[in-house]
Length: 275
Figure 1 (cartoon, helix red, strand yellow):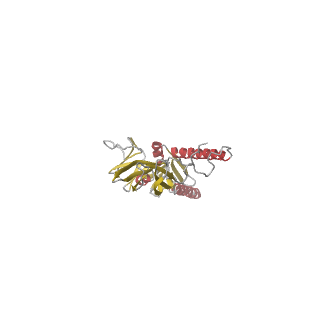
Figure 2 (figure 1 turned 30 degrees about the horizontal axis):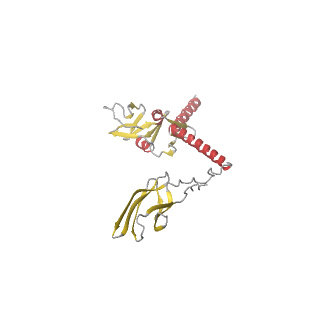
Figure 3 (figure 1 turned 120 degrees about the vertical axis):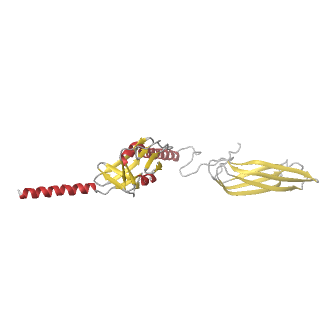
């Protein structure tokens, strides 16, 4: 009989040790693929994380009043009176622990409200909390990227030479750089013409344009060059403009000179020549 009680006592002791070990199992928690380093409580089938640390690792907004909290991914409207420690929008959370002046919320319950997924491997202790929508979006982006690569590969074997080859950037339209807000003021004083010219050079394209060269020519009606001004800019961002100005005295006998432009930049599309 003593032997039986001895064996029984050892068995009960082992069960207690195993239970304690299971309860005290170390967890490795990841929130959106980033390691969670805050405090947690593993109790029953619930995994509780400290609310402040959890919110820092998500896109959730948080309203705090004393020990009461409201979480949301939208504009937060706090309830008129609190009957629960934590709310998601206007829904009270059931699984909440208040311990050592800290509030803990359950990952599984949160996943229901946030449309997320919790995967828990009890053998390894690894817990993954991640957004299902983000995973689906990433998969879609990968698919679209693969489709784009496939379509690009077809261009390599195309007989149409106008198509862009792999690694080649599309040509920028010739009219992407424009002269805007032009203000030429020409005065004929004392039998001498004076031109005060101001304008802006603007990038009207969707991308940054580099190595811009502007040549402004003052020509006669017969297209003879009377004067030439040059301007250059290392780059212009989309929608960006730069001011240009110059002053010219007309010492020629031509009364009404004309203004023409030559604009060049890196990647400029060549205009087709008239046949």
